[in-house]
Image 1 (cartoon, helix red, strand yellow):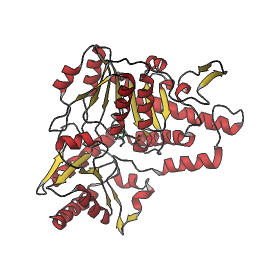
Image 2: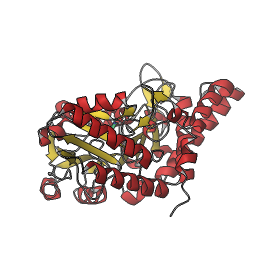
Image 3: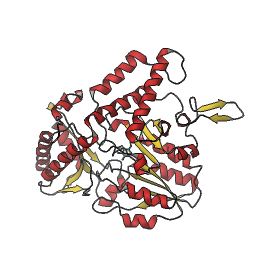
Length: 406
Ligand code: PMP
C-alpha cells in the first residue's frame, strides 16, 4: 500500500547491524531514545570537521557559517511544528529543560490559591517542576485522574476547570502506555477560562507531526533525541505573547541587550531564553534528523508503526497470563505489559541475552504504576525501522522467558 521499504531504511542506521550478546540487535526501546541515521551522524562530523565556531558573535567566516546553519535549523523546526514565527522556537537542552524553563518563569506569574492541573499520565519531568512551582508560589496542584484503559478521565477534567485554573500540563502521548491524549479538547476547554496549556510532546513527536497553530497550543515541548536527532537538544515552542510575558530562566551571555551593574536589559526572543553557548552542533543535527523523517513522511511512518503495533499486540495477547496496560484505541507504537506475577526486570534481562532491547520499570511515570498497583512493566516501543520479523523473534523471546521464569 505504500512504497515504504524498511530494509532500505535500515541501511541508514549503522547501529542496526551490530550484535548484542552474540545476537543481531533488536532495538525496541525507541520510546527512550531513537537511533541515529547516517545523515545525522554525517552532519555532526561535518560540523566539527569543517565549521566549528561560536555563533551570533563572530565576524569571521566560520562563525557566520555556524550561525547560518544553526538559525536554518531553527527555521526547519519552526516549519515542522508550524509555528507562526521562528523566534517562537527556543532551543533548550531537552524536554526536561524546556519544562523547567516554563515552570521557572511562571513563579513570577502565579499567585497563592491559583490552580494548576496535571494529568495522571505524566512523565516525572512533567510533574516535579510543577510541584516545585507550587511550593514556590502557593499555587495548588490538581490531578486529572486516569482510567483502567490508561486514558484520562475527561469528566473529572471538566469538573476541574474553573476560573481559578491558570495552567494545564499534559502530554500529547504517554511514554509509559502510548495513549494519545485528547489535547485539542483540553486546550479548547482550558482556554475558555483563560488558562494556558503546556503540551509535553516528547513521546508524540516520533510518530505525529504536530501543528501548534491548529492545536492552539500555548507551549509545546519535545526532545531531539527521540526524533532521530542527538541528545542534549530540546525544542520549546511558545506563543509569542506568552514568551514575552515569561521572565528569562538563566542569565548569562547571549541573552542580554545591555549590561551595566545598575541594570541589565534582556535580548528579544528567542535569545532571551538561550543564555550561554548552546549545543550548536546538536541544533544543526536536529534539523537534519527532522529532514530525514520528513523525507519518509510522518503519514507513512504512522501507518507502518500502526501495523507493527497491531501485529505485536495480537501476538502478545496469545501468551497466557499476559496483560497489556493501556488499551486506548488511540495509541502510538508502545506495548507495556506484564505476564502473571513475573517481575518485568526478569523478562527484560532474558530478552537482553537474546539481543533484544526493551525497557523495564516504571518508565519515569510512577503514578501510573501505582494506579495499576504494579512495580513496573516491560515496554516494547517500535519505530519505523523495526520489522515484523523482529517482532516474531521478540515474541519467541518473551515465550522463552515466561517458560524459564514460571
Ligand atoms: N516527557 C515524556 C512524555 C517523555 O517520554 C520523556 C522522555 N522519556 C520526557 C518527558 C523527558 O525527556 P528528556 O529526558 O529528553 O528531557
